[in-house]
Length: 142
Image (cartoon, rainbow, N blue to C red; front, top):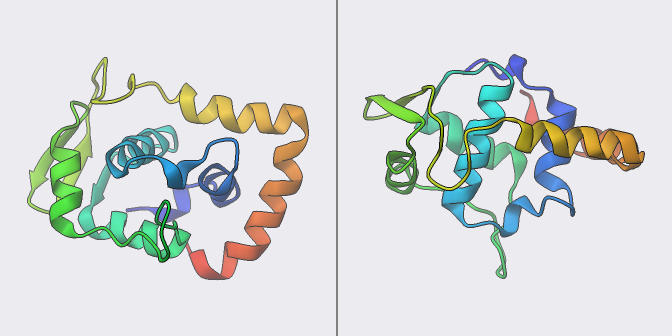
């Protein structure tokens, strides 16, 4: 995956924001949001390893328990297999395809972009984006 396509500051803000509460969503919904995010930034193909790298780099905590989410290849494949807007190229590679509706959310990147824009407009995102980015930029190395 082309990590350079991601706006690292916005991705960190979105995944770490209290307003979004990404880490408390079910894993399958988190993957749906990641697909929307990838599509927003023009990333149309990704692998199981890309998803694992994302979780490792972002250090997404497990809800209501200690530790970080470390998704297994099987769990990733199972969740992605339920999405209508992702097709499997091979066992470990996936492609985002046009679809009117994903498994949990409409296939609409405005879910992601609206949250980022709302944060910028309210003035809360700029400082948080900068703060989160400084904290996680060495971890991400995207």
